[in-house]
Amino acid sequence: MIDTLTSLRFIFATMVFGAHCYVIDGFFDAHFFKEGFVGVSFFFVLSGFIIAYNYQKRLQDKKITKRTFWVARIARIYPLHWLTLFLAAISGGYVVASGVLDWFGHFLTSLTLTNAYIPEAGYFFSFNSPSWSLCCEQLFYICFPFLVPLARDWRRLLGVSGLAAALIVAGMYFTPENDIKGYWYVNPVTRLPDFLVGMLLFRLYERLKDRNIGRLQGSLLEIGSVALFLAFYFGAAEIPKVYRYSCFYWLPVAAVLISFSLQKGMLSRILSNRLLVAGGEISYSFYLIHLFILLSYAEWQKETGGHIAWYIAVPLLFCVVIGLSLLSYRYFEKPMNKRVKSLLNR
Image 1: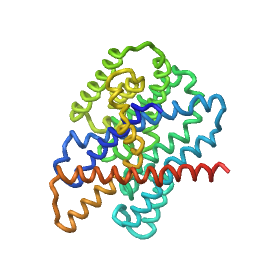
Image 2: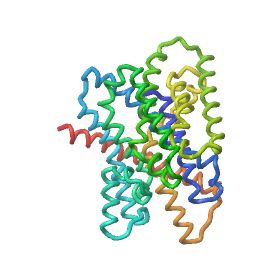
Image 3: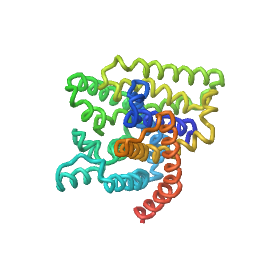
Image 4: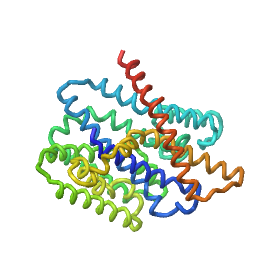
């Protein structure tokens, strides 16, 4: 694993946390925080890079089978997803549904990670709403072994990705405002190009990783990529949101990812800090747990009329999420990963 990219997972997960803090205080209902949904785009592009980094050659050389790959990914995403889904279902406040049959329909699609294919917020944001992104990841994992032959030739992969990008931009332009989230933000099929961008970046990484890049050059690349990302981030308010959901951020996210994957600059030394890497390791738990905690606190505020200043409440809630994520990672996520692999590989 590349430590700098693991640390970036934590940083972008924190941005998603900030994007959701508006549920507890209006201070966070501002572009600086709410634009943090870009963290999801980063995760999708990173997923394409890391999956290619870990599995592409092994699948090409037939050192592992498709089944082994799929089992590894099931063991990675499903145990914690099901745990948080059941907790959300038991709590009773995280689904929009009318009637028992409708409730079970929402639950079944969430259980099988198919809810994001239905362009209705009542489905794709039901129960533990961040789990919609796992629907996308599941499609990426299903497709990846079949994309490996395509990835042998970077020109062919680039051509397919370019065609997909052109179709997406055209489709976004003609989509009514009320439908953009259902069709372009959460839909797994239309988020597949994000994953392809990550696969393309891995091919670029292969060409650059052994280059003699000095500390100064590496530092300039990293600083430049961060500056580019921030320019896009702060200038995004003028861009229609439909593009910001994915394609607008491909370039700056790609620049950040490739520059830090090389681990040549001074910023990489900072991101290689053990605590930041540990934060990246628990980022999956953090991502699935954080909104549950924020919404629970918001409900407490509503029911009791209690109020704690946001500059006290948010750091406390952040620490609670970190603590729960550490416990989840160590005592549930890792053990269940091993158990599911063992069970399915029999």
